[in-house]
Image (cartoon, rainbow, N blue to C red; front, side, top):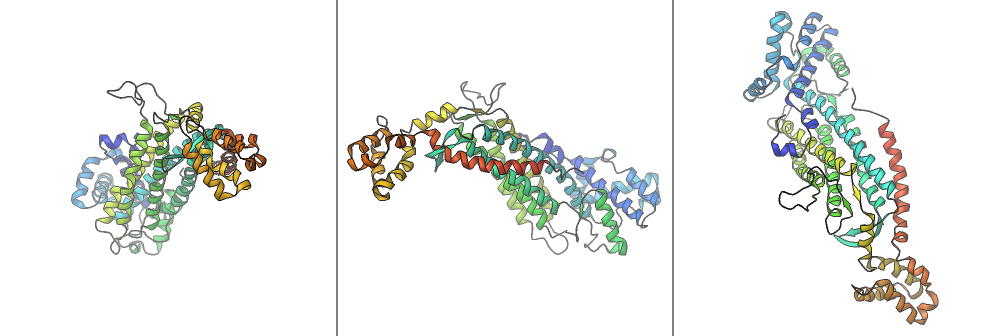
Length: 463
């Protein structure tokens, strides 16, 4: 397919090739060849005719730009393609030419072709998810206990661990990989119904022909033609859109943690990567930028698919055609975001010292809740909460919350009698504070590793 220079910036050559004009046309020819062979096997067309048809079902033999140009006037890409196929077969066997595309309809060949190229596109997404999941799993395991700030509403909240954050990034990707496979198992179906979905021209042999075509193309045979029943197909598209959203979330966190004032993570640099045309010091998070840009284009494409579902009777007028045009964009964006994030996490720089300094720079304020919970056992929750509220207002650049609280305890006989100062001090230790996150992350990662191994053991998109 043809994409603009700015579109290509946000996707990958591999995904462009998956939906390239030649790939779609070749998939249409694969359908025509399989149809002819299936009909010959069922005695509907002569075996010699099927061989003649299949023998010229090669996109390289045809002027694809001319077919595409003619499709605009014809109203379907299939019409000029079948016309050229018929003409080419007729050059060698006039009788065989009479059997080209017999009993089928334009939407059969176009939809089946889109299913075939989508299967290739899904393999690219699956491979990319496998790679990125591996990077995130390694990051989570390496830093399962590394203290890091958790932030809510863009403000420092408490101490978590980098491994816990990474497990949070990983989990939706493992779910997406599983959901894409499940949706694909339902949606990657042969389209073969003839003019109005009834296979009437092929009579009693229609079902057997469909079974043979599906088997040759390694597709599921649908219970019935889905010319205007697009639910399973659109659900697959929605799963791709949800994946893009999850990648956008990951890219958002990466970009925020890579900000110069935060500097906890950094994308790989060198060889001109992330530079600025004006400022030599810049180290821009270009992978996060590409992933964010790709993800932000996705909702519009998903909405367009949903808007196209109300197709008229047995053949849509305009909405099916709009769906065809929108469909590849979901995959282009998702794979662009995947590739960009794989580039980033393959060489991610983690500054654990900076993470610790960012915690320490808050003068103990992020430990206020833990301290309040500890004191509540002695003076009650309301009084403990009020005390910590007062102390946090007094803590600042020159005073640490821990120091203020320790002085308060020492000055109050009731508190001094019940508060163990070493225990209180441990509540302000980032490593101790991260232990809850570590335990949860270890439990979560155990399940994620198991699910990843199950996914890696099967290859559903290989023919």
